[in-house]
Length: 337
Image (tube, rainbow, N blue to C red):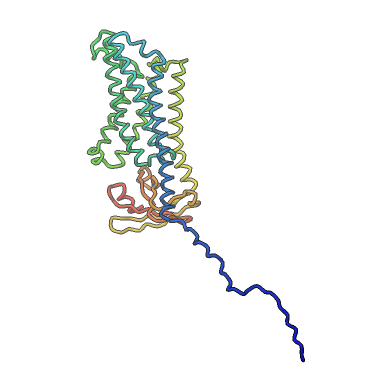
């Protein structure tokens, strides 16, 4: 017989292959949440800047009062006349400090504009301007009454005596200029004036500041030579002047020389004109459509006009465009630039 050899072996039972565990779908960030988080961070940063600047402003006002107290201001109040004089000095110091803050708000300092927004900073600037004028008027009135009481003179006699001092005459002129600027800023008056005239009157603020400085150092004991209070105010005025010159004059001038914008095309449509310009290294401006610049076109009759116009199209590497509506003589003149 044929013999059969049975062999046995063991093998693993065959089973259907197990598919790999399904991976959970990747979490895709919600664009809306990401955008909200981005703007929340930006808002917190902006609020932090605004809060820090507000604290600095209050500290500066407090410092102007503290410096007067440290100089023995209260100890000098021994009569009604000297008390009125003290009130006049205090209102003058606070008004001067507010005037410095007012100038800094309009200096176009990037940190300030990013904290408040340029429009809001200018609005605060206007409100402070009113308080500066009120403070300076009270400053003059209380000093006049206080000096008249101490010298036993009438108000007219005391005024005549004070006006014999040349530096004080400059101070009175400065107050008159500031009053004119304040009147021109009243909404009804502002609307009745051409923008160029209003802007020229507004620039007289810097003239008024310059006229007001001499009498502060020649007639005030607080600013006398050898006092550290004198150096504090000198430093404050110098820093303010430097920031104004840097951001209102030199930075725009350097930017104009760097980018060398020239008008390449003007398109008119009824009372609207689009002005296209070409320049160099424009990406360095980091500008987006909707942002605005202060424009001054170097053409006959226009070079002294300054207007804020928004960029009306996304800029390219070497072109910018603005769109202007004729709303007055200055903007109408741009139709033929």
